Length: 190
Image 1 (spheres, rainbow, N blue to C red):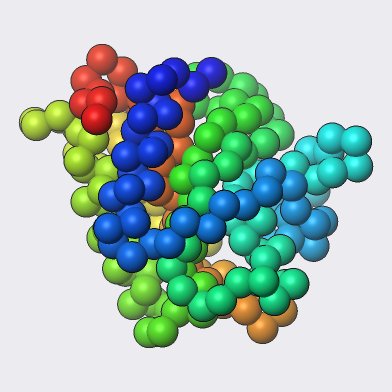
Image 2: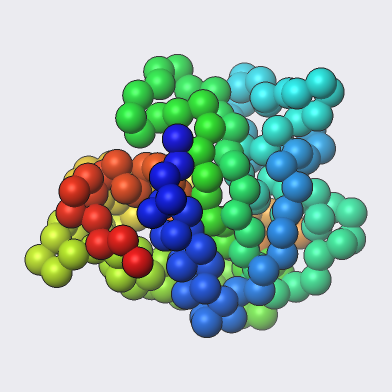
């Protein structure tokens, strides 16, 4: 469940990233199987609703835009639900949640430099929601990219992908309720 303060955090982070040049590009909550299979792990079956393939993140809807030629190079953002099949559900792993997704499509600089810029911006942006003297956000290398972690838990994933002649840098702007759950009563609601 997403509370009103969590919705405010998502909206505030969208405004923050707009100030950094990420343009709003609203996305549908469904995508093609081709787009879903670019990002989901092998063997995972996508969530379907009456033949529609529900997104695991807005990145999959962005991929559909790329594949259909409806997306121009640039820095984009969108908030969508994320529908996930997890082996275990708990406070941090849910069948659905809301996430602000960031995409730098066909970067105008080296992809590695674009990723470094995005990680720096995300680290600073998420830090604006932390109380003074609160827990530290760390950058950790993963098999497919980089994660920002808080109290040992991933709060955002970032990396570079290529598919069918398209290249993009992706990252989490904010995922709720994960972020708020990680902070608990320390959260500085904007």
